[in-house]
Image (cartoon, one colour):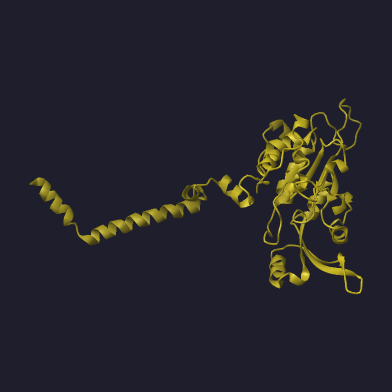
Length: 321
């Protein structure tokens, strides 16, 4: 009898009270979300999508689940002793060439050689006639530097004269400061798969301080059974322990995957890109104090395995084991 009375009491609870209780619960739920936003803690949102903040950044930075380009924010170095020496640009017992007879007894290491790709690494370029005006306007308003260029095409006009192409070039943010600071501790080589008629006048415009010690164009690339226009670094040196190539297309360095730094491609859709100064430059400074850059780059990017996943046998790994 008592149970029946209780059941009757539960059934007889006024519906407005239930609605009010439900409303209070929803208010408390949304208040919790609001507090999460104010505190700046992403844990709530990451739990909804099932991603940590690092995983989220990786998805944003990579178009392939197996290929991990440089992160948006440079990761701290694992070796604390390396961190201390990197800040001053000097390795253990190595003179940074800053003057003075110094006498550490250790011989000075050769300068790091940094090979830089051009398109989508340092700049992005578009044929002017096909570039929507709104893109140029938006890029200008966002602070991107750009210029127009006349380039000699490999095609010819009907009268046999060489065709002139008009190109609009957008510079990656921090480009000139990056090149200037990099030149302080490295020899810089430009290596592009672009044709010289296009690339040479472009590089003349961005290399205002003449920091490139050498410029290599498409004829310097090689063809392989897997890809064309591959950049074989042995055309520069047989000893590649202190040679690095930075390229948005990792297939460019498939012959020497242990020497490659895959960078995030640059386009006008990334006006606030910070890769050059905040990601690449610190990494290159760290590499400049290493006797052999390849083990460091392997631990960071595991490029031989990435090539294997794309059906290309690993190259160059056995030589540094």
